[in-house]
Amino acid sequence: MNPIQPALTKQIQTLEHLTGMRLFLRGRQGARLTVAGQQLYSRARDLIGQHDEFCEYVRQVRQGSVGRLALGFGISTFQLAPALVRAFREQFPAADVSLNDIPSDEQCRMLLDGQLHGGFVRLPVPDPLLARVVMTERLVLAVPSGLKVVNDAIHALIHHHPLLQISPKRGRGLSEQAASFLKANDIRPAALADADDIHTLLALVAAGNGVALLPAGASHIVPSGVMLVPLEGQCTRWQVGIAWNPALENALRDNFINSATGTEPAALPGR
Image (cartoon, rainbow, N blue to C red; front, side):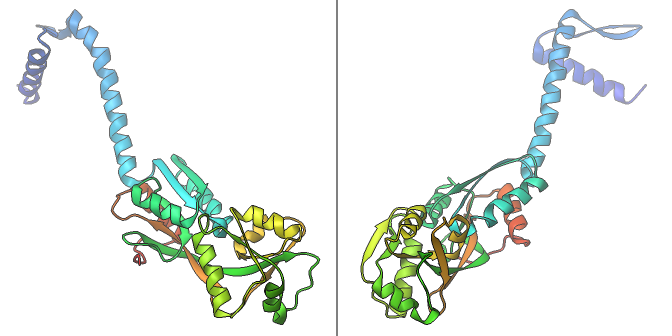
């Protein structure tokens, strides 16, 4: 007797017991499906196919090759972040990646809440977030294009022109960076005025309303009528990195970090 036969017979009996119906007719010619068995067969075949598809999807999720990835970025990574997303999509075409412009402080809050999976933010990040450096940013002075600028006269320029700055509520990191630069270099602006976003600051500068301290990444959105002057000295540089919440396991996110940094996501601690 075929050793497989008793096991198969037992499985059939178990299935018939579970369904409460006779599924096979047995005879000298072998077994054939009953009417009930025929009705259940096509449905069972579909369900088994769906099970196999589900198991394959589970494998892809575990490997981090499918799923949704929500990312944040800022003006400093205006070109870098989209380029890294494009490269990641080429490597993982089944991944659904979204990228939104969000202030660093807000990104950190969203990372802690699980609303974001990763974010390109100003470093350092608060505990328990981790981060890996992706670039160094620098401070520049935005001035009207018609204004003559001499490097050793930049301080005097800020002294004698209204200083336009982003509202701390919108960009606390940039606001603090500008304040640190002014203090470190003993610069007292003639007047201060806030705006809610960098686009507004640039428009005000272009119209001759004053000058503004901005990250060099703003060069990608500078309108005509504005010139950016690099600044040197104390408090003119800071690091930008990709941050994530290690308490939330996410293989797709880890693959993105690895792709973006070229290394496994072992990281800088939070502050």
